[in-house]
Image (cartoon, rainbow, N blue to C red; front, side):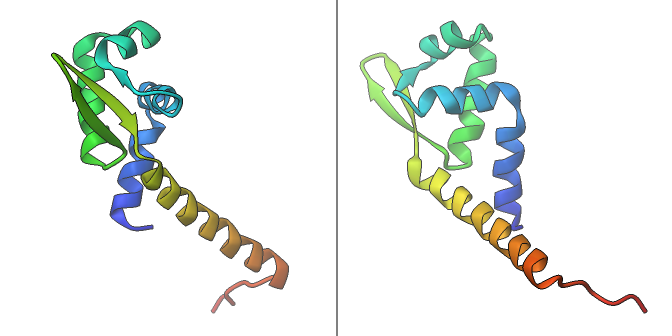
Length: 103
């Protein structure tokens, strides 16, 4: 896997970030909503959102004095396609019983 994909998987492995992503998959939310839904501190949520934004998983939308966050479906699609490709390759190994000979 490329480094970018590893970084995204590492980001999503964090339970709070995974929860944030799940929440943003259903609606655009601001930090105050995410604090309410997760029980995490605002600074913690903000740090996680910054990491998700930098990875290209989340977009922002200013709305008055608030900023709403939403999940970028194309970023999730790209990751899902890469994982599907890995699963397909693994199926080929199983189907054709491929293995490298030992020397």
